[in-house]
Image (tube, rainbow, N blue to C red; front, top):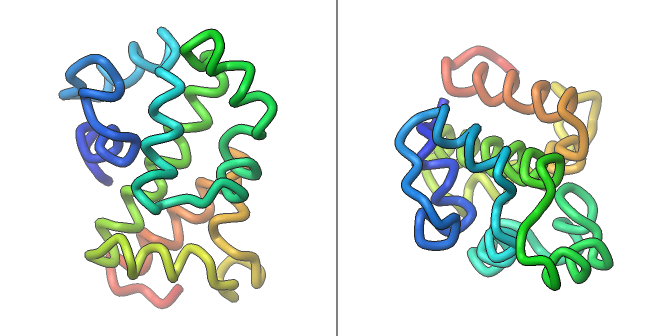
Length: 143
């Protein structure tokens, strides 16, 4: 499991989030306060998610435009963003590089009923299943 710092780095790090995140409780407080909209932009600019993928698994374009006027995400939107960031961080940790994680997340896998792992991140249950498979891969268990 990646550290809270590694998860926050996926969305641009402390400079984007606006606070230092050193433990899980800092992360919880940041989500409850509402993360800055710039965290979504940082995620896309890093190449981890395209605009279309962000629309599907994080925040629709219209909603993002609305939140840009406000400056922060809601608690639910922040939670969704952190769910996706957490899985991306786990995948990068398991596969060793952003590029390898990127490829795996976009290919259907029989371990997930031939679903594309990234497509499952739109729900908490789907994200959990992806994390379980990543855990199996990390421990050398056939996935």
